[in-house]
Amino acid sequence: MVSPQPYIAHFDLDSFFVSVEILNNPSLKGKPVLVGGYERGVVAACSYEARKFGIHSAMPMRKAMQLCPHAIVTNSSRGDYSRYSRWVTEIIASKVPLFEKASIDEFYIDMTGMDKFFGVSKYAKELRETIRKETGLPISAGIASAKFIAKMATNEAKPNGFLEILPGRETDFLWPLGIEKINGVGKQTEQTLKNFGIYTIKQLAETPVELLTRYVGKWGESLWEKAHGRGSTHIETEWEQKSMSHENTFDSDSTDINFMHAELVRLTEKTAYTLREDEKLTGCVTVKIRYNDFETTTRQETIDYTALDDQLIAKTRSLFNKLYEKGRPVRLLGVRFSQFIPFSVQMSLFDNNMGKLNLYKAVDEIKNQFGSAVMKKGSAVSRKKHS
Image (tube, rainbow, N blue to C red; front, side):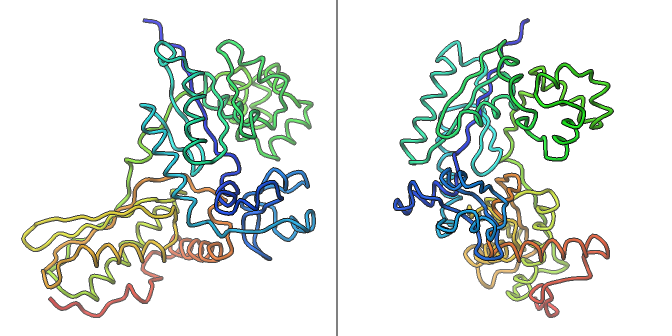
């Protein structure tokens, strides 16, 4: 049986953080806007007007302001980033059967087989227009036979554009482009390849794979495959269903609120440590309570995407306080995180979060070296519990 022609769409919200800021403050439209921290911070995102001055994400804010002294720096709408991201996610989920949320502002959609019923290009354009009209956010999209080509098509279509690479025309699109356009090719790999005279994807395709492997290691074989237009079509659909959790059954049932709060802190810290090790952010927190008669209840709430202990601890405590029937003996507590997205550097670049994140990572390193028992928050060290 012949496999159907794969069609993968890639949707990317243009300058997402900036776009949300402009929606909340329309006076920013058309101006050089920088989203991020002041002074010692870095640029989390920048408008296209700011990019004309050579500014890019992850650039130190001080340098960005030197390049464009009249730029407007803001991060006042950061509480809305997760809300808008979920809004777009809900629209996509209501329109397509298979999609992957690759980051807070980026999606892959498997449209294979839809050409028989709707027309892939037409359907993708209509979905993009629906997102634009309902949310007000600019969004670019690309369609191709593989994920990486669809993403590259989106990048070429920006800002607020659409580009389809027809089956069989992959190398026509790829080969004129520079090697730096391939997803994952960083400055070091780019420079290494250029040192060997490889500047374009066509030159990459014409280089024997054995030589590429010698130049850049195992990555060379993957680059050679991509240069010939071959790549993955796998859509990770379990991004929302996957979860990580920790729970504890007490030696004896407890009604001691202080003890249970301390246990929540311990469980949340432990799960947040796993979250950061996996380089993920969570968008949903669940607290589980099992009483002494084995009745089990849970309560969950969505949150702004985070990997920070203090935010997660505040949420688990809030959920526990809403869920717990005061005075009723508890035999088990559990904490679960779900609705993951990959850790995005932009999400950690705000002044008020960067220090915390670095602190938690430093603690993680100490735990890795000396064991988790070495460091505990004061709130996690409780008195001997009273049943």
